[in-house]
Amino acid sequence: MTVQVKEAMTLSAFESFIQQPENREKRFELINGEIIEVPSNPFVSVIASRIITFISLYLMGREMAGHVTGEGGGFVIDGRVFAPDVAYVRDLPTAQGYEQTPPLLAVEVISDPHSNTEQRDLRRKMPHYLRAGVVVWVVDYVASEVEIHIAGQPVAVYGKDDKLTCDILPDFELTVKDIFPKE
Picture 1: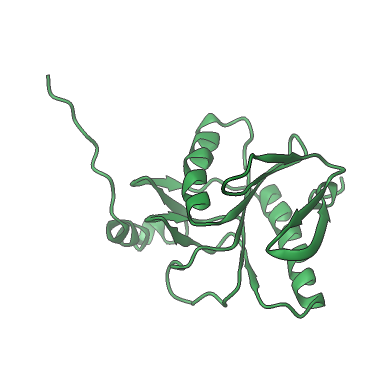
Picture 2 (picture 1 turned 45 degrees about the vertical axis):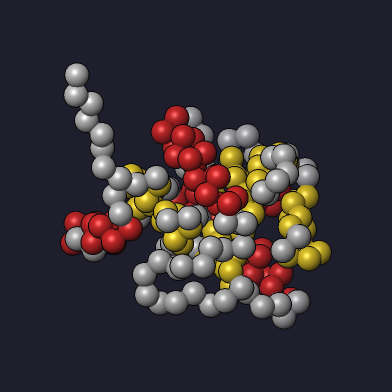
């Protein structure tokens, strides 16, 4: 019996793939050697934009170093390429390719909480984020919850009336319900 093993894509092959004309306007991640098209929707972008605004205002109000990227940014983490919806970094990102330094904070907003594929892909990224020392917030707009993942700690789940805090952003507080747009 012969078993076919799918060969994992390398980072350089991935970079060539995303430069093809038909892929330039799409967003992809490289997770465990597999190319994944990043799901998104305008509602998720609104939520991500709100988080970007709160963190940016916090940084400006304290004249604190750091920058917040949106869904267009991508990072090489543990040999994979991830494109979080929001990322907080200390140094200004370069204008070329994917960032080689992982963010301090990555926010993943679930596009479709009922999609098993999206949930699986998100969970496959988590150990790589944590190994790189990245704090991860996973936002579920259907449940109005945010999971906080920090290496070496149990996952914390915050409901709509809870306040998010983050050691890398001293004195930062954000009530979960403020992440979600008012209808």
